[in-house]
Image: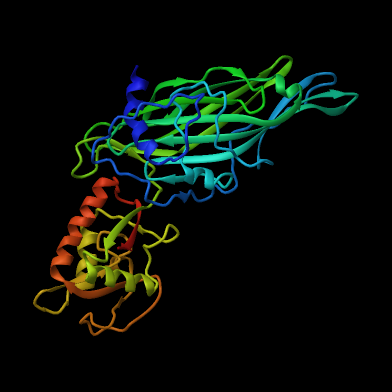
Length: 408
């Protein structure tokens, strides 16, 4: 029952990310309303985890059987057939549809938003025997694999689901059955899992598993990470059982986000987007746009900013950037990158500015240093609140990457 209660809250958040239609053969999960503080990720862009373009999973080396014996092997491969969205013959009712951004980035590694991560890859199951010293393949089955997890910034629990379907195959391999179990490593416990063991045939059948986990980082100020794994086992008569593990991108949960009483969980390497509105804060937006155009980081996943909560660093950044700012009525000094990032002047570099900013400094380009500009004081004051709300909403802790962009 606990897994059902976790799903009841998580499913709404995940459903917001997806426009994939659940087929009639799989009942739709419940979708109650989340707390209003939970962000909707549908408008943000997914990012690929660095180093995951070449997929790597826990698969043992293919065994070499003795003369006359049989064996089986699993290999992660690039599929030879395109991925399809449909789930015929699905049996796990609470499996959620995956988001379009996952399908669009299939076979290219792990992709994520702040509270969800997904990977689509291929798997080849091969059966073989040794006859007269020669390894002879007796069957093959090619699979699409969907590996998907989703969490909430308001909950200490998250879900990890796995889906497989053989889209082509022949011979003895098609007689295999598949089962799965989950494990968790880190500050977490398993809250429940479902994976009905079933044959991989007929082709096009979707075999699915769902699992739920809870953080143990619940004490005030606690921060904990957890890696979850689906361990899959193929069994097939006299053939050696073949197993493989599918990890999902590490989840971090905390009870340390300033201003939030609830425990919540995120994908910590995903750089959420702090947006300054051009229409609401024109002078702030203009400065940030020009600063980024001059080469300063923060606008992209490849060159994000990094949050600091160290007050000494923050105060040093502000003092070095704006300590000699001119006194002009209605204006105040703005620095970019923002003082609450490790990319401020405490990390080195020099100052730059632009026309109309009221500083006698050179205009420079490059990725180091800061830009300073006298902007409307009310906008500069509002910026502090925007930053605080963003860090709180997205659970951006010390050392987390984040992006700064200018919107409409």
